[in-house]
Image (cartoon, rainbow over all chains, first blue to last red; front, side, top):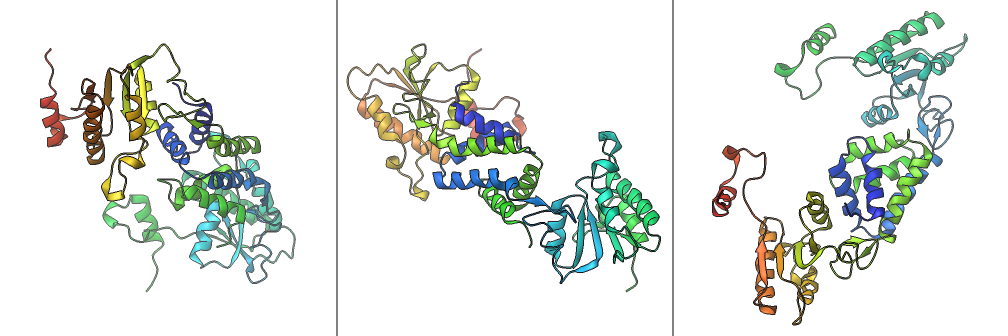
Length: 202
Length: 202
């Protein structure tokens, strides 16, 4: 194949991205050939600066510009409430709802024995350290890991460990049930069972 | 939304790419946060160098590292045969077959009156210049524009103009018919009509 080296190199870079196959990588690369150089320079800068200009918040482990992050250092938020999520994108999703005014804790993964990811590979100890001591001021921990095998295993493990640290701590799990806009007919049994268990009085 | 600025900037850059929506742009950006800095630097370099390290071949208008490009300057190829395509990616596709040993001409578009793209906006004149003069040595031009309205219009226009330049020039159009692996039942009428017209004796 006689593809110019700069083109082949960029195709290869794009192919390393998740969900980008050889054909899409080609299409994206040839598309960029028609984009003005200053836009390419911006794109290039944004990639190289992505990690240089961000830090992991020492409190919640979310990725941010400052340490502690803008959420952890916001005195207007409820510091007695912590939502535990698997990934930074989950924080983005919850922030978009505008319904949550507490803090977060990002685990950066979930317990997954099949892939050798145990509690030590994710930020579990850092969460336990946050509720350590007598006067930690935390009243409730909402476990918002994904409703997958790994997320549920992580949820169970966290509940057990948190209860050991502080038996009075309120630990909740995100409500499970039918998502908005779904068709009951196509919902699986587990989702329907969870929806029945989680029914609310009107 | 409290997303760190470097993250928001990269999400925006990804969103400008064709076929990348806000969700995919987010996913790609957060994925890159877990990639080592040296790989990010490579990716970044490949983008900023893409256009700086490539040139448009003055003969065939394909994008390459050298001028004339590696195909046009290859004496092992058949210089009497030119395949006219719409885009550089089409060259890549034909080269992958390994069945074509002639040269190419990349139009960089197709005639499309609805979008104000006429023959002057694409490299038509450059193609005509290649067959100009008595001793141009070109025997056949294969028109390989897409089988779309625009591609067909371009094909008709090119045929007319090329015949004016040199009435003895052999001008052919890519064979049309059923693609390999397709199901006859689902083929549209135009494709089937073309397949009947283009039938071959066994």
